[in-house]
Image (cartoon, rainbow, N blue to C red; front, side):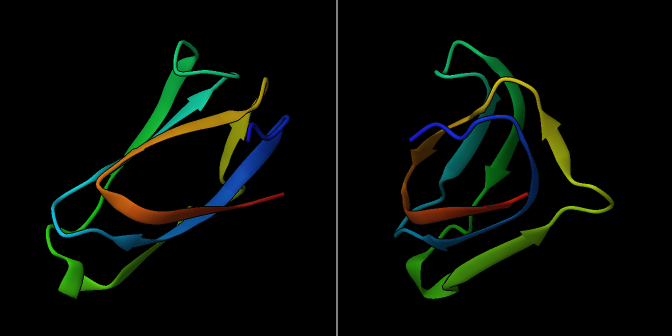
Length: 79
């Protein structure tokens, strides 16, 4: 799913058994401009992660597209 223009306020997710990443793009695919990479904990027993972005968050003009690697779940809080 691609979100339309918005501000990313926070991210929440569950780590997998190995270190992972969530890469966010301003666009409708991974060919858009990369706007951030979130590295997740290196072990499943690290549980969940929550990152609150300061101020008004990160503004995306086209939309938000994400690629996830070695992550059980990822959720973006946006407005």
